[in-house]
Length: 187
Image (tube, rainbow, N blue to C red; front, side, top):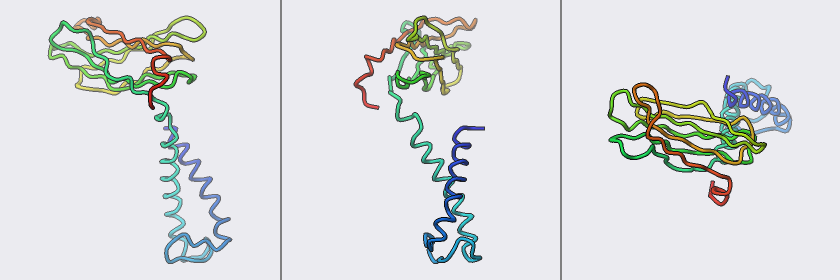
């Protein structure tokens, strides 16, 4: 089950539980209805209020989602010298996050049969050491990808390549992304 659905349902329940308090004060929030929530003429709007509260709570959760903490790094293309290329439109999370995320869209722009696009991230951890995320590949025109770290990092190297028919990466390009580089960027 998705987190947004669970959180939205929990918020809808909390909002619905707060409605009887509003009813005892002579709540008139619905056009043409007055009185208490328990009265027969108000029974239909209460049901619609729960669904409205659920929709409002889900949109409120989305507004608070980590999308506001992402930075657009931009496009990263595989190396030149080939008739086609792989490209990734890269977004990164805030470096202060416990789990750093590199996400975006991976595009295969190579007309050769069997050549595909490939993206992978190498994380340089704050405590020392490095680690690779599992690669994301596609032979389609475009596909979303999400690569995440296992802890706080100081740098990430985003590697975009083409894959040959034997699934070996070639024509790779690496963009190193550091916290200092994106420190003054707008979100």
